[in-house]
Image (cartoon, rainbow, N blue to C red; front, side, top):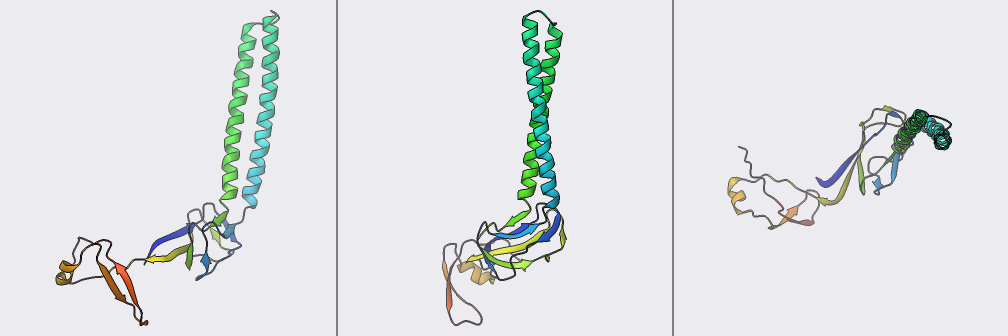
Length: 194
């Protein structure tokens, strides 16, 4: 089996579009392999952008009110409690703006998550869905295996197991080929089975 493999999963729910790979295709790390319909996520992003702009405008208004009230308090035209109220309004507007920016970050990430990319170099070994299917969050889309390094698990008799040591080299004969493959023992499973 391959030492390195990965399942590419959907990070957002939606209809799978632009499925660009099939079983047996070679992919590179970072390569786009599929897209989830991003129409809804783009709309949420635009909504979050508008809310952030609105919140920023409220901060600007609250800042001007605070500056005006501070000047009026310094001149003795209004009470200190009016200034305290404008400070509270300004702080509230700033907090709302920060929350809107965080919502914008979440919406931006959701749009980015509609693009599914290969996490490693390798071959597509399985496709779990078809183009046009609606996928749920965390649904498996494809499995990618890196065949650069393979691991073989072998069952040995107790007599054979006594002579095998970690680091030892081995020659493997693969069925269907005349070529021997060089290997090395990396670990020994200490559990035994009858």
